[in-house]
Length: 271
Image 1: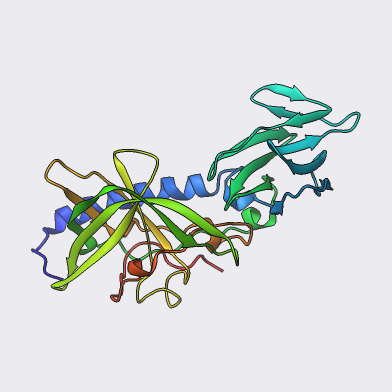
Image 2 (image 1 turned 90 degrees about the vertical axis):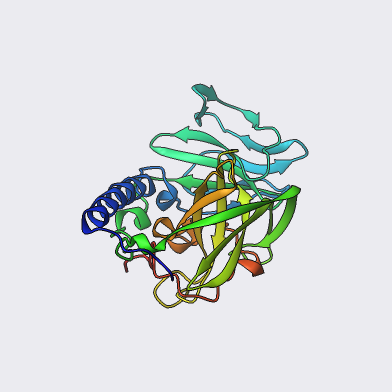
């Protein structure tokens, strides 16, 4: 890469800022109801089913997920105690509703056109055994300036998932163009739910070697009025599928498989 020299004092400040950011990211990841606490993933059908560890019989009806609670069984949604039969209504794709039973949060969501239930238990084995995520040392050389080239209109883009046969649709907003060692590269950038932030899913030459094989993600702020964005690969993070089998993470589109080794950001989770 072509870079100007960075004064040691600037390096120290950059590293300290990164350490603070990563500590906060780790705290969110290890939250008592974060994705490390998921204990199972149950796809709903038209047939009622019981799910281990949570009350009720669950199925997917014409108007979305439904639970039937027996006498003495309860769930709480937004402070309202449920009993009997409760219809959650149509859950928008990619979103979810949370129900509470004791210390367990029951995530009721929709992924790939199907309804799914995932209990989140603070005592889950994955969370209890979590030993942290190693990362490359923060390096200002991987904080690059790129340019965002928007599409005329957002493009619904179908991508694969870590769940075999599951396809997900994300809104692609444009491309981020940048260079590494003089080599021009580009990444398709997706909507991240905010007009001021873009989401990039990618792999690179470190994937499956020092970093998680299936994907990493990077959230990019901007763009500025002139279209410039900061692409800070030091803040590339793992998705939930790097830690749990109960995830539906999207895979990067083919054009986001970078031919260079991005030796920055999070590595494979600690064993």
